[in-house]
Amino acid sequence: MVNQFISIIIAILIFSIIILFHELGHFLLAKYNGIRVNEFCLGFGPTLLHFTKGDTTYSIKLLPFGGACMMEGEDEESDDDAAFGKKSVWARMSVVFAGPFFNFIMAYVLSFILLSCQGVDRPVLSKATDGYAAAEAGMQAGDEIVKMNRYSIHFSKEISLYTMVHTGETIDVTYLRDGKKNTVSLKPKKDQETGGYRYGFEYSTIDYEKGNVLTNLKNSFYEVRYWIYSTVESLKMLFTGKVSVNELSGPVGIVKNIGDTYQDSMEASGAFLAFIFMLRWSILLTANLGVMNLLPIPALDGGRLVFLIVEAVRGKKANQKIEATATIVGFLLLFALMFFVMFNDIRKLIV
Image (tube, rainbow, N blue to C red; front, side):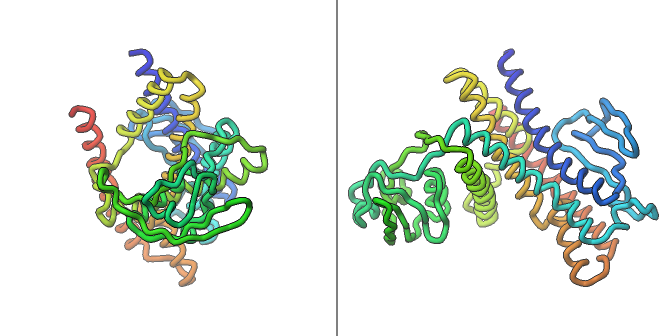
């Protein structure tokens, strides 16, 4: 019972820190551009704790899932010179974009810590399965895959992701053997047992090779790219019906999954493995939050950026009533989605 409580607290802390860092991006750029921040808060609902410093009230709300950087004149007209709407369109764009950008910065820093502690899973084949395209094209153990079509490969997990996203497709694979690049075109075959399509690649996703500081700095970029790519492709599969909306998870489901992962890893291998898995979850969530907030949906940062880009192109502000209406509709749709996802999470806990 105590371990379960600790795992839930850790999950909530991870979730809260990621959201807080997102809002910190908005906060710092607002301050830099001379915009007054009326309140900077973690969570929503009734205020538990607060204090005021300068023009800003800092607070912690009852429900820790969320946060806000409330700027003067952000959603309403204001004659204050420090209001959001009084600043140049480029200043406002920088403030809006800063939130998602800070998520990607956080993902990069956490990726560097992860790779420094764990190393990378190099995309080297342990075997090319007989009867499948890779072996038939002459690929063999020791070959290092460096590109699939035009997508560069740096980790073995990228092979898994790319083949899943492009299941059943013929792909051009570039690999290294004895320092020389070779490219082959591979058409997958259907596995009669699993029903899935296979190219015949066999490789390890649990053998890691540690690098130096410079290689870790470089590979951290590819680690973040992997999670961004994974999020974008998952959204595509959701909109095309390849993934059911029932598979979505909200805050309740995420906290449960993080907690379960923490408990299982602690019981299996102790604190170090638990730390590694918490880093992975944190990178996934912060990269995911960055991508999701850039979607061109009113009420999200991406939706606001669309209006600001239109303003920059036209040279005048968008109609305030249209923007306000679009934002309200966006909020209602997001709340409806959040309610559905939360209901789904609770149903999964009960069933």
